[in-house]
Image 1 (cartoon, one colour):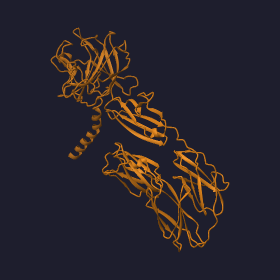
Image 2 (spheres, helix red, strand yellow):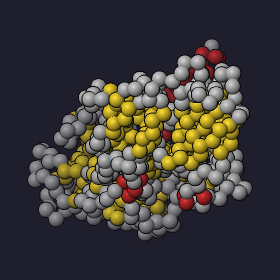
Image 3 (cartoon, one colour):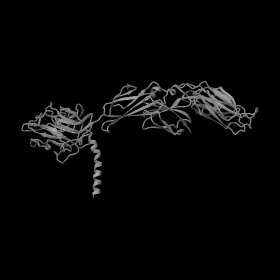
Image 4 (cartoon, helix red, strand yellow):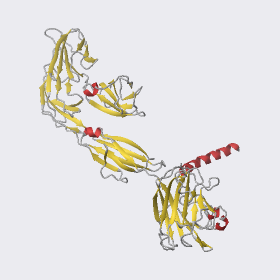
Length: 604
């Protein structure tokens, strides 16, 4: 029996926990849907009036001056509302009064300072609270015999004290903020309610903490004012917490036509660099609102910033989206095309345009139609066509890729004829492996099944012969190369003075010591990339990096930036599946300007 009781108590506590948490930001029973009895004068839950009053004259004011009404303001989902009313006692007008605290009646004179509403912490007449709302919204229908009469609804957020309204309303050390709604009559007939929503901002001019809220509503702002049977109907009191932005800026400049109630914006920037370096800033209406910014890049010409504004109550939220775009990069036709034919292998190279990122090559037998030939995507301005048919005429076309689906026109036709079939008894080199590539040097390993170790090596750069030598071993080193350059290497076997094999081709690129890379300082900076070599993903481990947020930039062997990704303390994993196999320099640049460099190999 004891265990069952403990379980019931625990479940009850869990069920009540969300309600208690919410009560810290909203009133309990703000729409007067809960009542403590079935009579017309029963008390609304969490509120009190004259029958619950204390003080030396409470006995004389114990008659209820309120009604439980059925219905409500327009559009309400509720079925009840509250009406308080004035009555005449011995010729004196007793105003209607309802409060979340307790009424204290200490005098028969309505304006006497011994009459007030107060938070009674020692009893059940108090309402714990911790929020700092921005506004109070409340629906009222107010009838008064005099057009000059005003009803009132007041909310005071105060500290850990028995705050008294109106006695303590000028003691700023006792309260933190207040919202006071004062309004004239909305209807000329007490039997025909006309509902109006009052929207009142909270003013925070007090110095105390926020521990309680004291609500007071009365049929007249002047104690004892108005007439008997003046009535105030109230429904759906809501404390509003701001999740609005007051301004939105791109690179420090305000977004044109910004309105806090408009949530989607589009801005055109001048160029691609401006797009990639763009920053977003904002000013929230409420200082206690939380704003998180997510960045989305649907394509390289578009960036989206999504600002999620969450108010203090952790419930009210809004999303603002600003989309930045820029014109496509110019994409010029490929030119400076060079060719070198060695047997059935052909090396093609060309000039790299300023905005060229990749190149598409298509080739086929002479006279073929574009779209029907063999194709390839090149990351460097060169390509090796191997194992073509001997002694045949070919055509080739090249175009640049400058961005997502942004192509140049196709180049003019490049035509060439392959060489004659070589002697069959002199075997070509099986494979060429380029090792230890650096800025100006590398080593070559030749693998051959031939019974001779004499080879001719021809090294080309931009179709110019850099090296033409005969080697008597399978390992060769090249030095004094140009950094950030693509080289073509032809190798053939020399069986004797009359017999040579066909050419075997390889391509490689030296590393580029560009201004961006050479200026980086790596001393005393520790970060690690693993696995290395990598395949699909690489993890950036910040061993002792000064900042936990920044950008990772990948440079290929030519020194060209091929990819950049942001990193943070919570996101170290980087997808590298779109990068080709090869050697890369990986630059880590933190938001504080600190940079570091690591080398990374990617295998496929």
